[in-house]
Length: 115
Length: 114
Image 1 (cartoon, one colour):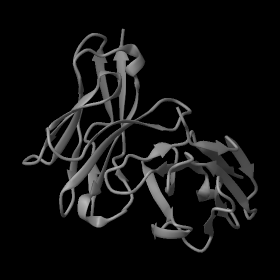
Image 2 (spheres, rainbow over the protein chains, first blue to last red; image 1 turned 30 degrees about the vertical axis):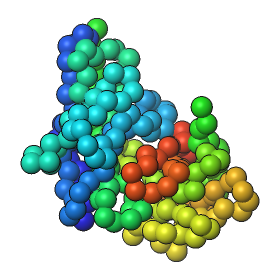
Image 3 (cartoon, each protein chain N blue to C red; image 1 turned 45 degrees about the vertical axis):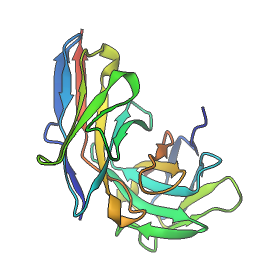
């Protein structure tokens, strides 16, 4: 069975500082990994994904994530946080070998960027 | 840029009533999904739909729920005999294909069962 863990309910960071939102996953095979962001009263918005190849993937709004197979992690990062990055962030996984199985989401991490 | 749209944005209903939540997926997408998010909790998969039939469903998606693609554009979720615990945000999503393709989510319908 697939699962995702986001160990932090809340991450606080000062504007201009680097941010990291952590995610670890568990699948039986190889993973497809995704990050989504949810702003208040809005749906989930796709940020980036890892499929194969380069372990560092770049996405929207200056975000990037690093796939680490040995640590089964896919942490989301940004070099310089903006107040407008404050939102709820979800990591999701799908097993490559499981056909069209649904995305399995973590419980979310609330990012608060303080001016 | 094309978007997934959902109506209504907020639905209030009495316990035991039937509700239909509507979604218009992105036009060239072939896979459709419903997820729900109970307040303060994580996003949970309900059902996926491809080629006019359910391809996968979770244990949440019992006989109380059904999905339909009544025409070429709409994708609906029907909840019969609603219960208090059905109160949640319901998200529709679509993707071009399965596998590596990202799913695009609508803004959600907030269902409140009184």
